[in-house]
Image (tube, rainbow, N blue to C red):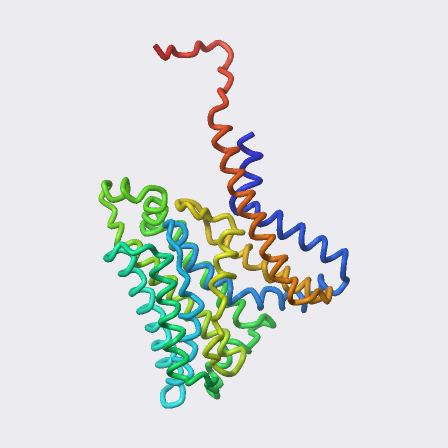
Length: 331
């Protein structure tokens, strides 16, 4: 029973969903299962995956970050502007600082003012998006630096650079979440913040750092999109926060906190990319594509809620005692 619940839940749930969608698309169109198309699927998912990776840290803490798309847009614009008068590394550093500062402000608003993260990051999303439009006056900013453009357009070993960046990001931050003391603190705080505080865990510091990570990875996503397009679009990140949250939920991270992993988030992002790609190959109306993705998200949440109920039910099923043993008295 417990094993069955495990197969239905968390990261493995996303794998079954991805396999099911891939099989359906393979049957529906012969163009889906080609090397070039599969690379396009992962390439399209790379930006969403990076935003979702940072979002995973935040959601495991039972918080949410609605500003990731706006951070992505502002960081891309900041890099494009700095590249006009400065070098490649200086521009990257400025972009990362923009992401880190935005994340820091989010974290301070949530921890120091006790403002709900939904409200704090929603307000920051509006502030950052408005600031980006003010700086650019609504116009795209062209990028002509070849080193920067390589981030989105180069193909080392025949694989697009954004995919390599995504893999590297998930390896680094996946290790941080799964194997470091900070990662253990994230799970502990997400599971029970008050108990974590009483155990001596610096709850506020953990939350602030999680929002900073989210901001930095959003900035990296902005670099990739800007480099791919060759211009920094001031509205490039609009709506990306919803895709990032969807990837996290589909990947098995619980909105209640304390549960999740980056491998599930990566699969969730690829699943969304696969759905987009398949619907395009099948010439499905763009107006229906969001409907399909919304239904997938609802299904993932439904399975998450019901698998949790099954887990709790399994925990209360009495286990048979081994032969020759006598159950201990509860009196």
